[in-house]
Amino acid sequence: MDKKELKAYKELLLKRKSELERGIEHISQDNLKTSKEASGDLSSYSLHMADMASDNYDREFSLGLADKERGTLNRIETALEKIEGGSFGECEACGKKISKVRLKVVPYAELCVPCQEAQEKKKKR
Image (tube, rainbow, N blue to C red):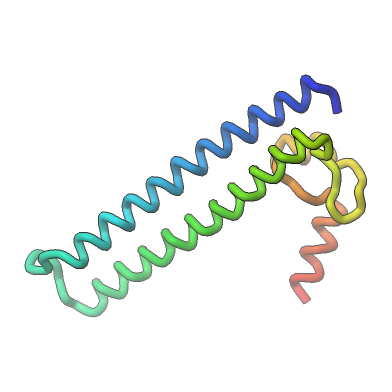
């Protein structure tokens, strides 16, 4: 892969990283706000069990999203390190080149399509 292509992938990864960091920050702020409200004056809040369950579900769902985004953020960091180390775009399983089409869609891809498909088949079993 030439320097121009690597630069384009790096810019794409940095843009996605920034978007994820903003998303995680937003989720964290919302959950912090909700937690503070929940621990404060409850006179304006319903104490109905269904409302509390719904709030808990929403909070858990948001935290699950943030956790998934942190995982993607880690993969982006690894991809950026690979760009610097000269191994970006190589499949971690078989060592072959990951297609440029795949990298444009998932620039932090760790596996080529055949290896990814094989891994997903193993998970289904």
